[in-house]
Amino acid sequence: MPSVSERRRKQRHDRAIPIEVRFDGLALIGATANVNVDGVYFVAPGPLTVEVRIRDGGQERTVRGRIVRIESRDASSAELGVAVRFDLAGR
Image (cartoon, rainbow, N blue to C red; front, side, top):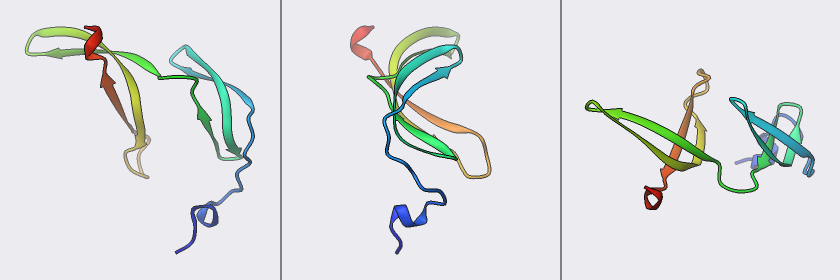
C-alpha cells in the first residue's frame, strides 16, 4: 500500500507561515504547518471555542464549548461535520 505522501496529488511544503483564518467574521491568528497549492494545514494557538444555542422541547440554552474535530461528510458534498465538546464545568 502506498504511503500517505505517495498518495498526495500535490507536494506539501512544511513551512511555518503566519496565517489569519476567519470564521464568520471572527479571526484566528496562527501559523501554517504545511501548505500546497490545494490547501493548508494550520495549528491553532489554543482551543477553538464556540457557543452553541440549543432549542429543545420549548426550552433554549446556550452552552460554551470547544471544537474537537471537523470532518468532511462525504466527497460529493460541501457539508462538514463539526464535533464540539461542551464546557459543562462553566455552566
